[in-house]
Each structure stands twice: as structure tokens, then as C-alpha cells.
Amino acid sequence: MRVKFIRRTYTAELGFLNAGEIMDIDDKTGSRWINKRIAVEIDVPVKKSKVLAKAPAEAPEKVTEEETSVDGLDEMTYSQLLMLAKNNGIEFKKRPKKAELIELLRGV
Image (cartoon, rainbow, N blue to C red; front, side):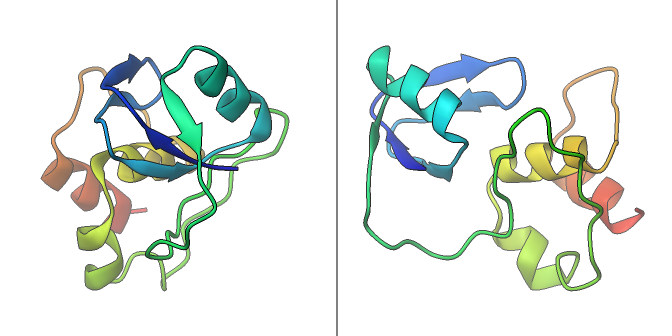
């Protein structure tokens, strides 16, 4: 499901999500955000993202070399980088900056 945030919100998993941000997310989470009037479902094609939120039951995917290309990581949003890091088992004690996330992902 593709959603567009209509107001700024915070999630423990993704951190702050800004109004206007577009994200691919699992149907259960997307429906919950829509019901809480945080986001709306959209069908408009957007710049293809390499990160898709997975249902919690699925096993995390490893980052491929293609996904770690300089252009790919630098073009991703902070939320997408954070999700990619978590899907690859990268843990951190404090909230990393975008540049730090990119460095961590390149080291995987």
C-alpha cells in the first residue's frame, strides 16, 4: 500500500515522518494510519523506492550491492534508510544521523 502523510507524526520504528512524505507500507499499518487520519492512500506513481516496509512476520532482507550504490542511498529518505538498516539487522543505541546511516549501510 502506498500512503502519503497528511500531518507530521512519529513512530518508534521510523522516527519522524513529515507531511507530504510518500511511503510504501504493509496494508495493516497503512490502514491504521489512514483510520487515525495520519495518512491517505495514493495510487500515483512516485520515484521508485528500494525500500518497502515488510509485514513483521517476514524475514529481514540483506542489502544488495545495487542498493548500496552511492546514488541509491543518497536519494533515499531518512525513514527509508532507517527501515533498510533495521531490515538488515543494524542496531543503534541512539538515533543516528542520515550520513551515519549511509555509512552503516555501506559497511553491511
